[in-house]
Length: 254
Image (cartoon, rainbow, N blue to C red; front, side):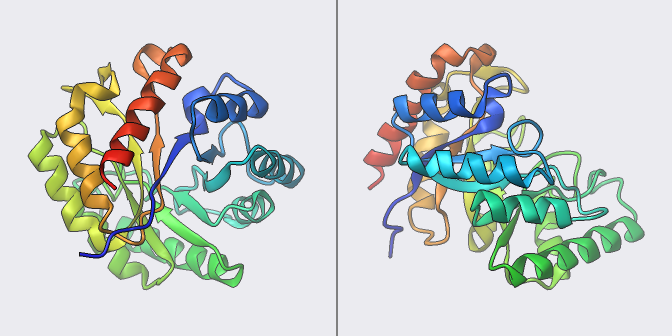
């Protein structure tokens, strides 16, 4: 089986919402990470092209890559400010959310609207050579594998991928089954260890899950980044330790 040359160990800047962009860059470098998904809620706000360009330049000057713009666009309304921000940032990909309603409660009209808006956003992104990626998340149309695949198909876009993260409350085998089903669409992983529900544990607490997930992802040439998201107790002093664990797992999977 062909394996990906390398999956970058990266960081979601939302992990450090209370820190400046320069502080995010500094801790990423000090932790031996390679890429950053810049969050659109604090560090790189939609429409703030000047900040986006500056953050992108600072990221690359520090020897890091911009993995993506982590937007909070929910497939509704004007996508233009998000897209111009991603372009200025130098992000190859924009993370988006699949609406505001979970799949169990969504109406046919809800599904049609999200699919249509996603397709339109993807078309505008394609004009700039950019990709979109759906957040695999509860409370949206990507809260199950089946609903995610339906949305990807209905969007009709070839430049839309999906992230993966373990669903809250899912055991290892259930989470890994979802990963396998989404494999053809995957571009990145959000990495954290929560168990049994929203309790934020050290990354190593779910070693059996993550070592298997990363080993599997190595065989997917489209997966570029494994991005740390959240640390126990939001204690940023733990980030270097968590990053070291992730890097060790990635090295072991090569």
